[in-house]
Length: 481
Image (cartoon, rainbow, N blue to C red):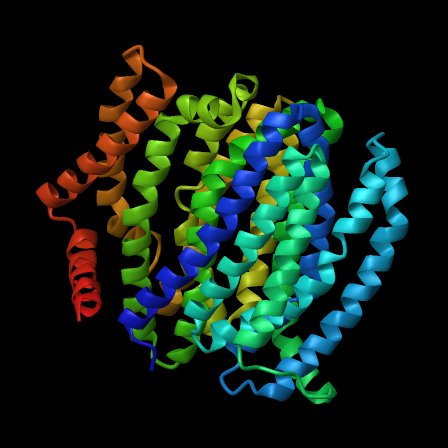
């Protein structure tokens, strides 16, 4: 049985792994942003859309099926590995020959070689995706952290050296390839899993029966998320896409890591206790409180200090990204609740519900997208805010029926952190009226925001504080001994 402390411990390791990986990518991005024009950076953003869509197709929901299946063995893992490798090869061939047409559509010839080279990562991603599924199934996230640390340190050096050597966009390309290659190799020697030379059509059909619904759900999400970049890059100037992506990247570093880490931990945890719905609700409640107690003040603080942060990291030529950054901070605030709800629904075996939910949400998102694109790029960003708030109600509705833990109960659980976070944000916003260096202002806002938030939690005696406090004491006690 997976306990609450086990979930918290695994969540911390997974969070460390995610943040370390994204931190290096952000560091390389900052270096490139200083060397490249925003318009050039916007063109590069288009390339990743096709790679991400291909990875979603390769995953096919089958990795999630491996984690969800209670008695998944080596034959299951090996079967999915061989199928995924064959699919990745087919998709690489498609992207290779489609590259010139994509470059012609966007009128930029460099897209052809970059897409062809970066698509090599499909093979490495396929192998380490199965390794990650094995790690998640067995809650071995500490191993993943150490493996990823080795990969990001080495690949980070590759990207940084190439960037200063004048390689431009290729620095980011080879940094990504080096990262995935090294991660795959290191995990091969660290994680004690080896595929066997067997493929079971019977096992594949069983996993596919569950996974195809997850696949369609993930594919729909990926298409809609990436459609914005493709359309903005075509309708508006490429520099607008660069500002849009940079504004999204920084808050995404925080929220995506928390959201992905939460889903990665909760899915196997909920699957392990799927027969005890009361226990699932209890773990879900603790997880939502814990994550929101952390992520809400981070996003509020980030929104308030957006201008000095952009000036300090990316220079003043990226100032148009500031409004996008602030809008995305609002848009991402309730994503952890969506993640927790979807993890519970998937773990309890209701993959058909996830597909129905996503179809309904995407119908609504389509309407919002059409209207917002007719206005401007900022309206597109605000459309994401509106969509995410609607998604909260839709995602949590099934949990009301299944676990008696719906929108009202979940909102009441996080309401204290919303109020305290916005109060903290209002206080530190007043510092922006004082004329000072961006670096000093940023440091003052972040440090004082942290102190104010802690004080407010203690004063109002929030449940999140009472839940986190003994866990911190226990961790310090174990480290002391």
